[in-house]
Length: 424
Ligand SMILES: Cc1cc2nc3c(=O)[nH]c(=O)nc-3n(C[C@H](O)[C@H](O)[C@H](O)COP(=O)(O)OP(=O)(O)OC[C@H]3O[C@@H](n4cnc5c(N)ncnc54)[C@H](O)[C@@H]3O)c2cc1C
Image 1 (cartoon, rainbow, N blue to C red):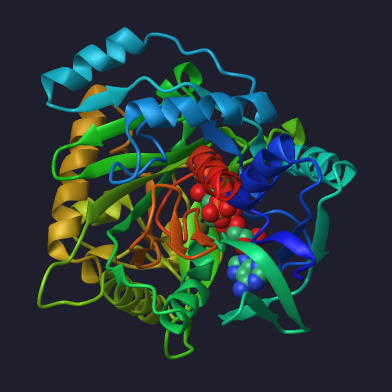
Image 2 (tube, rainbow, N blue to C red):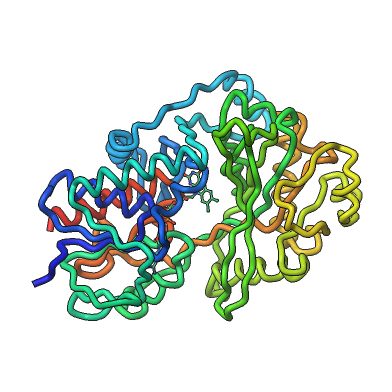
C-alpha cells in the first residue's frame, strides 16, 4: 500500500498550488513534495510579480477567461496579493491603439525577490502545519511502472503523482513522457531581448508596474522591473551538455538596492512547423550561437551602436557617456544583429519603434539591449482529461508542461490537477 496519497515533484507555484488544494478538501491526504534544490520554491523566488487576469500566464489552448477567473479566485484566497494601483492608463492606451498596439489592463501585485522569499517561508510553514512533508535536495530521476517514483536516493510508491518541474525541468519531463509512452507535441518558444534603461526614459513604470504591450507580429513586452531593477543570467545546459546563458530580470523591494533603472523583455512568440521537428532545439541553437559570439556569455549592445550598425565595445560601457552602467556586468559587449535571426530582429525593432512613439525614451542611445532572452517550454503532453492527467494517476503541470506561463497560471494549473485527483 502506497504511503503517499500524492507525491508532488517541484516546490514551484504549481506544486504548492496543488498541495494547498488537496489539503483544503482532504486534510488527511498524505502528501510529499520533493525538490532537487536545497530550498523551496521554484519561480516564486524570482521577483514575484503576479498577474491576475486572463490571458497573462494562461496558454489559451488550455484556458479560457471563465476557467482562468474561476481558479484565480482560489489563487487569490491563498496568496492574498496586494494589488497595485495604475494611473493614466487611458492616455497610454489611446496612444497605443493609434498604432495598432494593445496595452492590456492587468491586475498586478509585486513583492520583489526579497518579498517573494518571505511569502515562500509563510506558504511552506502553512503547508507543514497542515502535515505536508517536504524533501529538499532530492532529485527525481524518472517514473517506473506500478506507481513507483525513482529519485537519486530511493524508490517511492505513490497513489497519485503531480510533476511540476518548471521550465528548467523540461528535459526531465521529456524523460518521463518517453518512459511512460505519453504522446506529446512541440511547443511554441519565445525569443527576444531584454532592454535596460533609465527609469526616467520609461516613465510608464511609475503608473503601471509591468505594462503588457501586445505588438503586431506576435511580439509583446514581458516581465518589467523598475526602481531596484537588475538584469540576471540563467544557466542552461544543451542536449549535448554545453553550458549557455539566457538573460532575465528582477527587482528588489529593499530600498537600499534602488538604482532607478528599469528592464523588460521584448519577446516574439513562434512555433515551428514541418519539416523542423523541435522548437526547443532551434531555441537552444540560438542560445548557443549567441553565447559563442559572446565568449560564453550573453551579448549586450547600446541602442546607439545598434542604430549605427556597429558593435558595442568594452570601452562603450567603461567610458560611459550616458551614466548607465549595465547591471549584468558579465555580459559581453558586441553586436546582436550578428546573431539574432532577421525575422525576430525585424519584428522586435519595429516594436521598439512603436513603443518609443507611445512612450518616447526607449530608443535613447544609452539603452542597453541584452540578448538572448529565451523562454522554452517542454513538449506539450497530450492529456487524457481536463485536469492535466497524462497517464493514469500522473499529472503534468506548470510551465514545464506548458499549462502555464507565470506564477498565477502555474498555481492555477496545480489546483486543476488536484481537482482531478479529488474527483478520481
Ligand atoms: C528570473 C525569473 C524571473 C521571473 N519573474 C516572474 C514574475 O515576476 N512573475 C511571474 O508570474 N513569473 C515569473 N517568472 C516565471 C515563473 O517563475 C514561472 O512561471 C513559475 O515559477 C512556474 O512555476 P512552476 O511551478 O511550473 O515551476 P518552477 O517555479 O520553476 O518550479 C519547479 C521546481 O521543480 C524543481 N525540479 C525540477 N526538476 C526536478 C527534478 N527532477 N526533481 C526534483 N525537483 C525538480 C525545481 O528545482 C523547481 O523548484 C520568472 C522566472 C525567472 C526565471
